[in-house]
Length: 174
Image 1 (cartoon, rainbow, N blue to C red):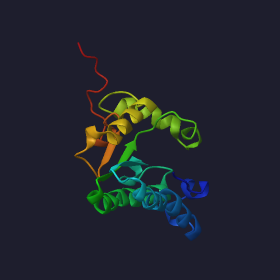
Image 2: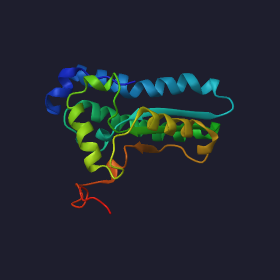
Image 3: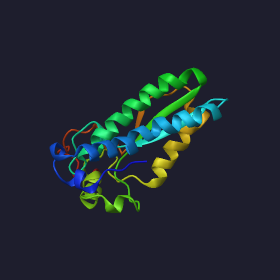
Image 4: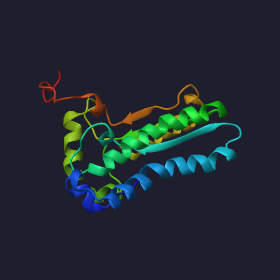
């Protein structure tokens, strides 16, 4: 779950209201803690839980503002919950998905531009899909990921590892 008031996303971060900040942090971060507390007694045999995050948690991203701050807090919560719940064999993960075409994303300012830049900058040279995110979630929820917890797993065609566009990216191979 994530939410921030639109005016807190489009303006400057410094102009975020206290109420807008509290709303973004409550819905976009504290909700994971509350859900983990409710789920813990039900997960008697262990298990896994996942939070959705975004690159804007670690890098200043246009039109993300207070949501980036909330996602940074969410990512810290993933780590702290992993420590708290690990003794009960409950794993906690974050998936940092790149821009993907969804109904929710259609309302994000600048989404078309992000979808255009991804294939140019990401090492895999493409946008990601809902299926890419779902496959990662299936792995993290399965026993195949039994040895992992507390990490942020990027599903962004490698975008997060790049600093600048590679000068040879547009050259055709072969």
